[in-house]
Image (cartoon, rainbow, N blue to C red; front, side, top):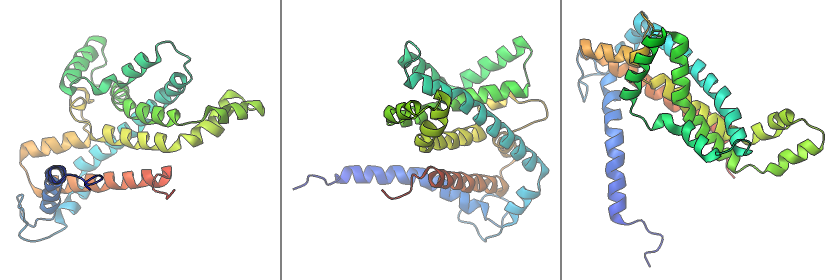
Length: 262
């Protein structure tokens, strides 16, 4: 009689977890529209003043530009490294494929603070402290597991007979990869790229140790602003980041075709 029904305890637990995740988001969004000089929830009145202030603040604008350049560059580099690596692992060209795949996922295992301190010491030793290319390389290593995981998952469901058929018809291996494999794994690739970009854009813990002099990402700028005193402008920036992240996820679904009915 009760088969297929979700137990009440699980429903309650799911509701509690959902509230735990959504309540802070709702609080931040409401605070962003507060017409007071301090964070007030619920706000005493509503205004768009703090959004206008953020979009006119050169400190925030400079950090947004720097974060965009860093995230785009790191994501592109991660894709260039992860995509052929995933294809080689899928084709079993390399011995110990499972071990290599685990190593590619290893950046998710180590604590970010430990990684940041270790990389800071290494950068100082080799003369790369404050180097933007080194920061890009670190971000690429941090975000590459997201691309690896989604691409390997897509390749696992790919029918190799399609690629073999293209080869039989005279297409080169590179041509078969570009014309057959890439379109087939597009949903996973796009999802991985979006998650990698968002992760790089939001990354704080490791980044704060390795920033070039005079530069700051948006999360670092927000942290500095909070240290100096909390006002609704920080909530406004957070709200904008929430909106942009949501739009990127919707765009990812649209481009990958994940939302199309079967």
